[in-house]
Length: 188
Image (cartoon, rainbow, N blue to C red; front, side):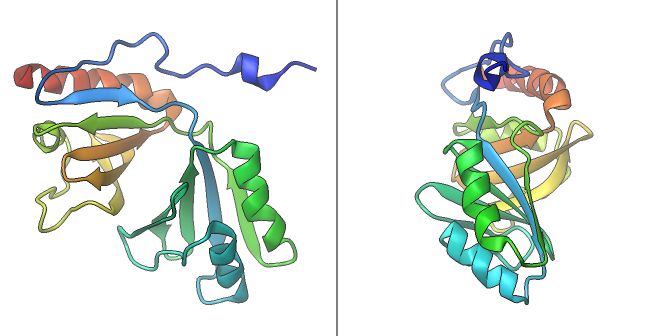
């Protein structure tokens, strides 16, 4: 049987990422991503919270984190857990405790890639193609939402005052990164 690690290839392997003093774009490939769906008021939510290490976020845009895991609220009964641990380990850590509960736990690691946009001009770059109000009074560190960039659906997560993670579907990653690279030019 083929070793899947040798077959893994980022959708952005051959893409040059722009860097300047005011903004930097880079890919964080192969982060583990597990989708969780369950009744937020049921026993399964408590079991999932213990498995992740933090209570599941309950409001739009909320993110709950431990040192190694981040839980992003996607909907009233849906979360995305992101980690740099091996995908199989994250999946097992979440799925095994939920056996026998009404819940869905799915490995989505290959579904998206992660782009990180940082620097004092990062928000200005995003504002060129994102309809969401990114002003700090509305969208601040620890916030994650589904939105669009250049009319492409993405998960946008602000991780710091000048740092964002953009999670496009793998099939759209080259387009999103090319659009961001073009938007960065004026800040170089």
